[in-house]
Length: 49
Image (cartoon, rainbow, N blue to C red; front, side, top):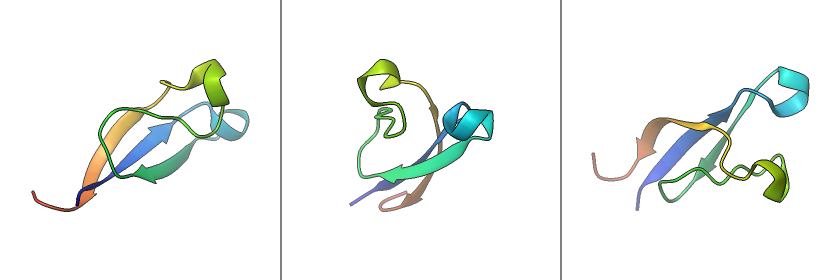
């Protein structure tokens, strides 16, 4: 199973934050439905490379 690290530059008053998820495609946990797709994939951290 693959794990991906994503980054949102706007989280926590523009300090930025990362999160992990087990599928590709941004699903931002910080802003709910208002900015669900805000962020970018930083790296694939586990799984088949």
